Length: 272
Ligand SMILES: Cc1cc2nc3c(=O)[nH]c(=O)nc-3n(C[C@H](O)[C@H](O)[C@H](O)COP(=O)(O)OP(=O)(O)OC[C@H]3O[C@@H](n4cnc5c(N)ncnc54)[C@H](O)[C@@H]3O)c2cc1C
Image (cartoon, rainbow, N blue to C red; front, side, top):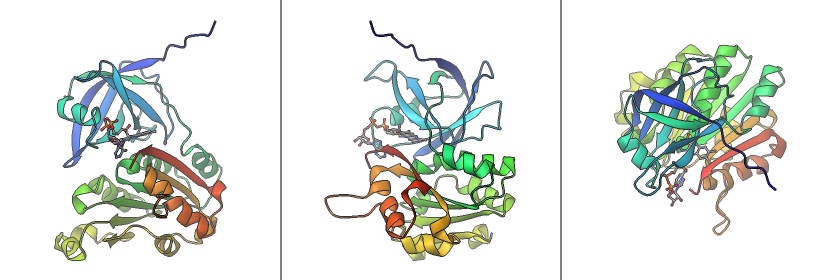
């Protein structure tokens, strides 16, 4: 007879909800006990009842640093599906939800290498909500004081879709080893000029408009880029491209540029 494993869940209460963009929110959650341990890059299942299904769930990455003991953070983006939009519209401060134990190995090799001082540079490439686990990693890395240069590449459609805009500007000011490159893939260059330039006077902030990231961007911003470690997170297309039309994903672009496959970690969030 096969054994039935019962998944352990934690009861988590929402204590804060923050708008990141027009369609993305960050939830701060607290537990009754402090037995919840995770590492950056791991995800949890969040359970909720929706009109379509009782006890439905989706995966969300932990976006806070594990060093923040008293609470965790999850960032959720509206993808026009059935679960996340319902949660974004209905969850309130004070509500309690079930959360699974953390799982997954994304970023575990990066953490091991960085903590042993075996990598000098890590490039984090995220599309849309794929930036979520990288916030956890960057904050953790700063807390740990690792001697690590971090280059964050974040691809979003327009400036209005830019998740963690203020968090990132703060992190850049706090940590000199961080550099960030944004791709506003559907934003015209003139409109990016309309934004208050004083916000971006911080060094180590770059952006490209009206196109996706290319290998040249990586080569330009990551020192000795073929020797760096990479983590890519987002939809399948961002990571692996589109077979039918030959469009390359970031993984193929890096490999064609000479980055060894074993130095690339990936986490796929879904179909797009
Ligand atoms: C390991 C892992 C970690 C994740 N972490 C996060 C996170 O931190 N934050 C977050 O917002 N999401 C995260 N996701 C995605 C999340 O679990 C849901 O899949 C996503 O929010 C869509 O749920 P939904 O209820 O809106 O859509 P569903 O009802 O599940 O699907 C409906 C439609 O949405 C499309 N869809 C599903 N996922 C995506 C996607 N990622 N992008 C675009 N379209 C999609 C499907 O193709 C489908 O057509 C993660 C996924 C995985 C596998």
